[in-house]
Image (cartoon, rainbow over all chains, first blue to last red; front, side, top):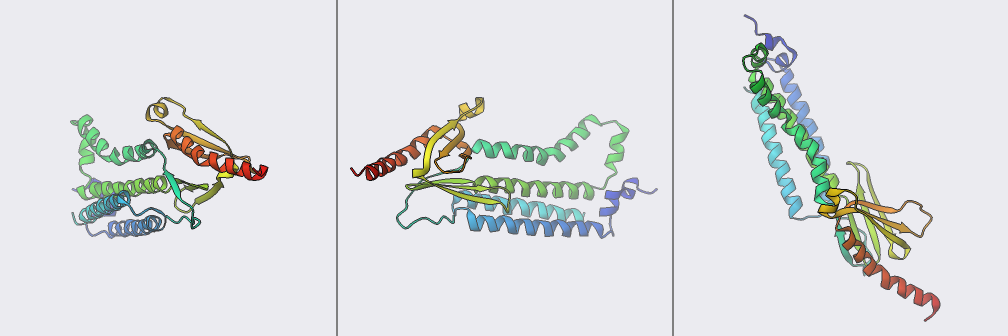
Length: 77
Length: 184
C-alpha cells in the first residue's frame, strides 16, 4: 500500500533517496553561516568585550550546534 | 566599542535600554520558538481518536524533526539579531558630550554626538504602569542648534538619575562659559 504521507510534498522532500532534504539542509547551512558571519562581525567590531557578550556568543554557538546536529540527524533518520 | 574620544575626554556614564525592552522584543520570538511544541501537544491532546491524527501520524518522523529543527534554528538566529540590536544601542555620556549610537538592524547604524554646551532642556517621559513600576522611560534632550528634532533615547533605565548626572556635568560647564563671556 503506498504511503500517502510520503506522496505529500514534505514527504517527497525528505524521503529516503531524495536529495531535496540535503539541498534544504545545505541551503539552511549556508544561510546560517552568512547570518552568523554578519552577527559575529557586529559583535567583534561594535560590542564591548565583556562577560555578557561571552555568554551570548557561547549560547548562540551552543544552541546553533544543537539545532544543526538535529537537522543533520533528521536527514539520517 | 569604537568611540573616538579626545585624549582628555572622560566617560562618565554608559546607558543601554532597560532589560524589559529586550524581553518585550524577544517575547514574540519566544512564542514562535515554542509554537511547534505547542502545536504537537495540542494535536496529540485534542485530536486523539480523531481520524485526522491517523493521517498526521503517517508523516515520517524525519520530516517532522527536520521541520522543527529548521524552525528552531531560524528563530534562534532571529533572537540573537534582536539581542545584538538591543546591546549595540548605547548612550555614552562623557564630561564633554553625549554620544548616541543607534543600531537599527544589521546594516543601519547611526552615531550622533551632542556637546554639553548645546543642551537647552532635558525632559523625561515615564508613561504607563510598567514603565512606572520598573522605572524606565524616554529622555529627550532639546538642543540649541538648528535641528528641531530633540535628541531622544527611549526605554532608558532610571531616567531621572541619568538626567541628574547629565545636569551635574552640564551645570559647571555652562557656569564657566557664562563667566568667560561676561569676563568675570
